[in-house]
Amino acid sequence: MNNMKIKNIFCGIGILAMLLGGATGSVAATAAAPSTSQPVASNTTTSGNATASGNTTAASKANKPAADEGLYYLRPLDTIAINVVDDPTANQDSLRIGQDGMVKLSYLDDSILLKGLTTTEASKKIADAYKLKKIYVNPQINVSIKIYSEQHVFLSGQVNRPGTVVIPPEEKLTLSEAFNMAGGPTGKSAKTCNVTRTNADGTTQLIQLNLWDACHGDKKANIELQDKDSVDVNESWVGSEW
Image 1: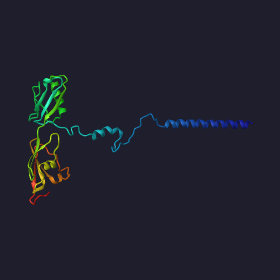
Image 2: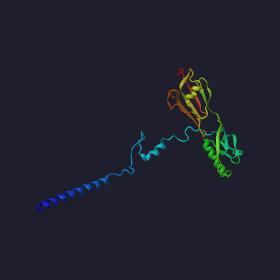
Image 3: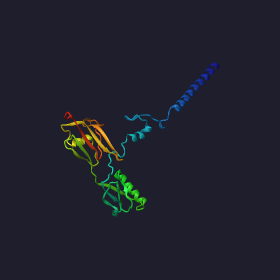
Image 4: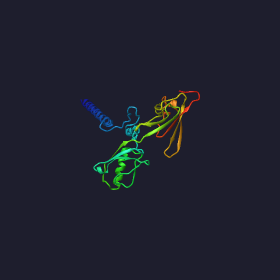
């Protein structure tokens, strides 16, 4: 009888130990599992941008087109209008930018340089000038273009209609476009041409190009022409190479 009681006591202790051990294991497992309420760092990449989530902003900035892409920059002889909000007496409805890129503003003694600026940049520069001279406290300025100054290139040599080709306002003109606008090749046209360009510092640059390639999809040869570029299409001594 006593032996049976002792045996039952040991069995009870064993069961209790097993129960306690299981509970401890459950607590340890729970402590090891990460909490779902905490943010977890992720290296997942987004479609085609193999960048970590923390670099998304930098990647977006890198892929964003330049702010000035496609904008028109004011040039000498452009005619602009300047509107001063809340003071119509200072408005200038037809103001021509000088050859030096300067304009004379209402109430200001000194001229201001607008050449090379967008209309938004010009508006801010004029507003800053008025504030600096304490003409206005917080002026609202709007600059708009009334008449664009004419930009053109010259074509000579073996083209059907040599002469001036106008660059449309706020548009680009490529070598192949200018060549086609001048009537294309003659019966003596070579595949090459020379572009003479005057740089901003007054130096002259000679660019030799393959006109045939430019007209047949070669983007490197099909350069964008600049105002006052001169394009001379070479002559072939064996007849047209076109």
